[in-house]
Length: 171
View: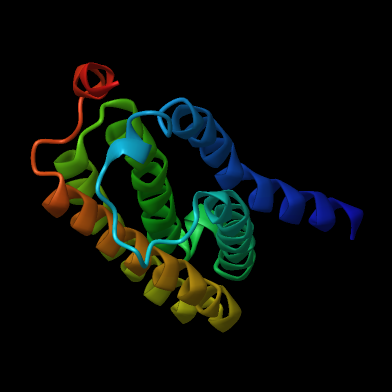
């Protein structure tokens, strides 16, 4: 039983590793780059992103544990769902360096659209192995939908992006 608890904790923490690294990149680019952009009024407040992503990462990690456990790991029917999980997680982790690190609004949009599709396929495939695991992807997909719409809107409303030199010229 104790061994299973450690597996669950490990699975829940693993997705957060990329989230923590992304948080460092994000925090270094909120001011002045992101704050200077045109953003929609409906966007969530900046402080909400950390707690929401932490909860979502823990949920998807636990879902991966359930699928691994119930689907025979990489040697059973869970193989494709777990490959999809790894793929969507890699896309998820790469969005922040693209959007915030490279300041690529369009690159971030391409990435998050691919992420949305891969995460949807992952959630559906998880449901086929363990219904709870599939259900755990519903809040993730809802948040990804908001994040995708936000990325699209920011890219649309800031077609040339915002460069640091433009910000400092205006100060």
